[in-house]
Amino acid sequence: MTHIHDNIRQIEALIADACGRANRSPQTVTLLAVSKQQSVADVLTALDCGIRHFGENRLEEAVEKIAAVNSQAPYRPTWHMIGTIQSRKAKLTLPLFDVIQTVDRLKLAEKLSELASASQRIVPIMLEVNISGEASKQGFNAYQWQTRPELKAVLWQELEAILALPNLEIRGLMTMAPHYEDAERTRPVFAALAELREVLRQRFNSPLPDLSMGMSNDFPIAIEEGATIVRIGRAIFANTHP
Ligand SMILES: *Cc1c(COP(=O)(O)O)cnc(C)c1O
Image (cartoon, rainbow, N blue to C red; front, side, top):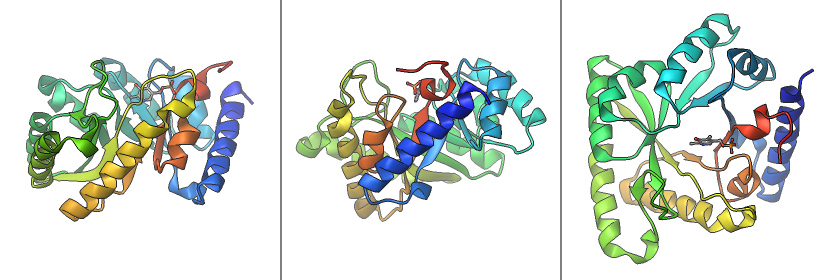
């Protein structure tokens, strides 16, 4: 079998180890393969190894790849949008994806709700949150949210508005952590997202079952902090990974 097969088995073992440390069942963690920049053949190989969730971040690339994979695959995978969505492209994005993980502003949520209503579909979405405060990161600003009441007020107001929109199912929160050589340094970011989810669950009486966090370099730590979806690209598809 290919390196993709070996990589996936290795990642699954690491997921199981992390779940063991966190006292969780490995079934509570979904391995999402980030297939951006990967070929249709490699996506089909990953599918053959049991992967059922894929993530794409660019509409132009996803259009062709998703059609090709869906037509050739024995099982239709679940496609997650994990890239920034321009409002004017929302209409093209929505029909391609099963889950939109990168809802990073109220306006986009409103647009998606409108489009979902028009197509009589309930669309699962996740709210992208900027926990680290990095200017390069998208998402609702939640930098140091625990100690900033005025920021919390804005965030709560926006979330309340989104939860009231029709035809959207708010699955939970998604974040991109900063890239650190020492992955342990990402732990506070993951912990802050998990804590935010907990507070929002109670405040809005909404289940928010998912936490999408952790990538190739830091997914075991994200799982220890509660990730239910890990988004992994390089560690699955690269021939040698760090
Ligand atoms: C590329 C990407 C990933 C995967 O990153 P790797 O380091 O290759 O695992 C995860 N999430 C998002 C949003 C991405 O753009």
